Image 1: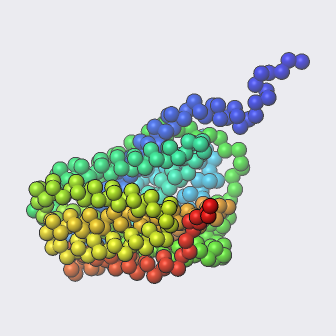
Image 2: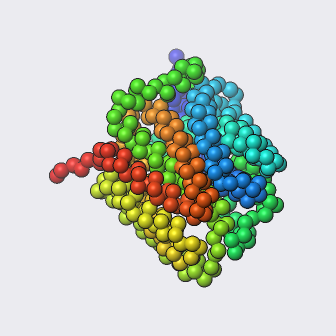
Image 3: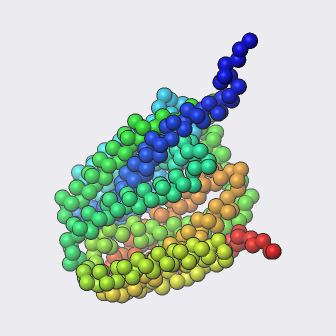
Length: 426
């Protein structure tokens, strides 16, 4: 009896040979989607807040409240949609249908956001509805390990990080070109232009992803997503890991410090009285400080330890934040503050991310990441409200003061987390 030459090839090998033919197309799709979705995220975090403050004429704390509600609703639905996608079986796959529906719905709601200046509508649309639909994009995070072989994921993840910077550039270059200057804010028409453009870019990136990606078939039968969700929310399991519980609490403060600034970053930029000469001279110096700071602090994270870099970063970053808060639109002081704040802040954030990955138990990483997402959402809301409160009373520059206070407070909790980098004695 003659055997088929392929009959002895395992099913997994055949599947790998087939999917490798589509790998390039999948990578292109992931890059386009990552750049497009991050472009929308930049617009949602900046231009929505600017619209509420400058165009709708509401106090910053209202945008902070919308952010708080949206972060809590979003965290809940992030868990729900991610769990649903694990158990979804359709012709388009299990992730793609949710991403496509979520992208189209979010784009439509973004356009509707600027149709009415009523604060109740802005809260419902921006704080609840968009939070629900936008987190349908959450399963996209699982597409990379679904599609990309393990031995290539490091390179592809690096490429996707670059694409997030491309998405940020798409927003900020035209924003800075169109900035009125002299402390003047963008017009209603400019807000409409950017928010509408963001919605179109998100729609196109989701459609392109749907066209280019055909998810590999899932051999495991679907389970019950409600039962899986209960496992994700198992509080007792988290408490068994005391080190994780400590960094879980500390991470709340880091998320709050981050939100205190970046929730209001665009209104902050609009309030700066730019001096072109100062920017041309000091800008490259600030950029060099950030690059060098990230390099040395990042290197120290793997040589000296996560805890050391985190503590150093969050001691010195607030000093730069206070300089910014008291600069009173002095562009030179502002640049000094930026040059001190961002290198230490970003270095500390990088160390915390490595610290967190060290602590997460291997057998339940996904579940614990879901729990981290909840504490991050709570921190985002707290930081946005606290920062908005200070900004309304003392000026927009005080968003950096709010972040400084929160970062110094976080040190109390980070000091309780044990170091995870263990040096091998030779």
